[in-house]
Image (cartoon, rainbow, N blue to C red; front, top):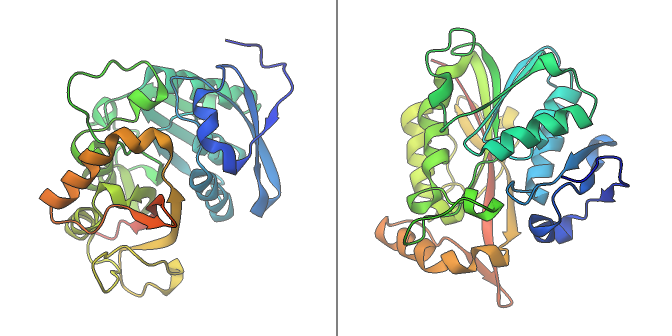
Length: 295
């Protein structure tokens, strides 16, 4: 791993796909433009680097405020969201990820940003398995943040060596997404919230149905795609969940080998079109969803 004394590279959102193959140990200077601050992130080729939409999520987290809150970063990856919560004054950040390299980088990036080590609890976990039944965590978390992996399984065994390998996430790319929706509320206080990213290529109707089942009634769009909208959270009325940001994100070349699986999954599951095409270029709909534990 390279020394962290090197000159940081300014993160360019338009080149985000390039950062997945950048030399491990490279330091990125990530600017959170909407809140006039920045942070440093060390890269590793076995850990997914931030996407532009993930950084926009981070800006929203900063705007929400984390002061004195207990925060969980579910599928922490590089630790981007953990560090943002820590810089925002969180009392404790619990970071979990299946990838041991991700846990290592979350810890390194926490230290790189001069945050107090005792305020980070980072551990390797297959979804929530390592913290189930933990009395200091279950029912104690104020907010869960998550930008989980989204790629579907390919045929054959996968050797998890690169960041792309760790992004492979079951049929439809849904394992982590579904664990978050079906189990996340168990770790929240009453009135606690979850903020997470999901995509059209994973099946938006499936996501909508699970949210309605486990979180209660949410806001749904008319038409084929129930998540194809965005509203201000405060205008949701009595709904327990809603899409608060919606962006068409360029489908990176990494996903091209997965196109047959993505299209087949949507067809078999009766889902809306998983991708959209603009002038011959493929995009995925990306949704930022907020949900509140009310019962």
